[in-house]
Length: 110
Length: 114
Image: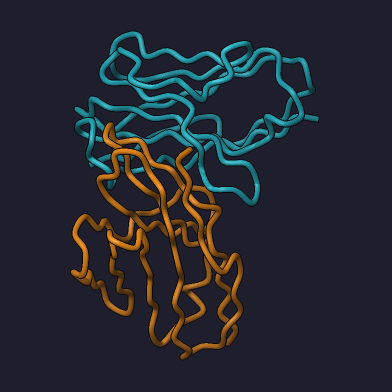
């Protein structure tokens, strides 16, 4: 059965800290690993990773994929209160469907 | 480009009642998805359409849930009769083609069954 496991499930940090969110996956016919940020209802797209070892960056966020170990991490540097959200990891199967993990709830304290 | 539109935004019903949700995808997007997100969980795919055909409905509880996309554009998801465990956010998403993963989600419908 396909599964995506995220850790930790929740995390509390202070502004300026650096955080690392973890995601392991087992997805049949795996194609891509995606990260989303969810603040209220709609997840918003952050990254899509298809190749091992190539880091993707967007501002203070970065992510990398290890297809041998079936693992990905999302890093956030110099965290801000606006980074508080649930971060979802998802494995993409062959038909575009996504298998999501439970998410990591990040709380950034001022 | 307009986003994925969903309605209603909130719905409260009693168990055993029926309810319907509506989704209008981004113009020109052939693939449409319905996901169910229970509180504290990640979204789970219920059904995937390619134009007006079903690609995957393996996790749709077909005894009570139904979905259609008759003209290959907008879609409706129906629950009849609703159970308490159906309380969740129902998210619709669309993509330009099957296999395009970074798709856009609508703002969702929060269903509460009491």
